Length: 211
Image (cartoon, rainbow, N blue to C red; front, side, top):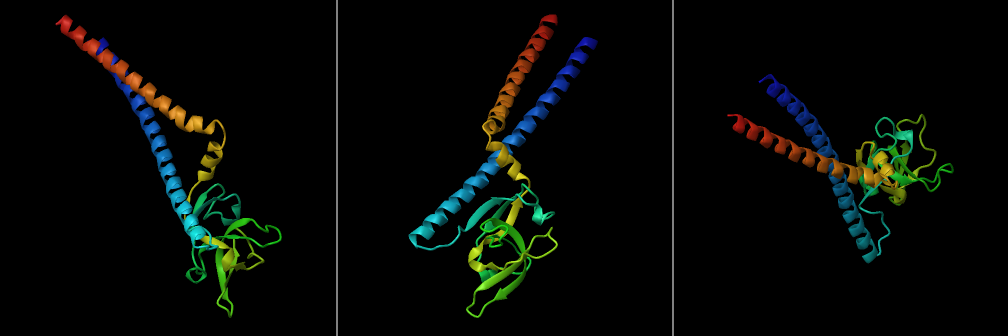
């Protein structure tokens, strides 16, 4: 009788370990699926909008776009390796406090894509908008005003630390770890489950024979 109880406790502990590993694997797979859905959705909108602009001969940035932050200038609100999604906005829709992504004409970063916060807005007589920007972590404002035409869009949300995933997946072994390993874990779990079921059937059969 005591041997049977000990065996059942061991089986229960193994089941807990298998359940935990299966749960972690499912979470990883769901996260990957969620990220892929976001990427597909953004790509679909991006591609559709590009075709629309080409068809109507409009020189405008895409309606939505995504970027990875590589500078600490917006810490702590946006950290290095965070992902951001920006939505194209006309100049009159932007306001002080908005975070925008734009092409810099600063001599130090000329031509680079920058993401900073609007701290001031100026409007010329012809109706054009210019934005004074500043990184949240910087002590001074950016030295050059940002023209409306240089703005890609307004940041609408961020995905923390997704840049690490992108960097990891860009390596040859990244996809192996993210796709093959979880799949192998699921297979191992199913095999252990089958083995456990066979053992339980054998135990029940032995109990019937003893009776």
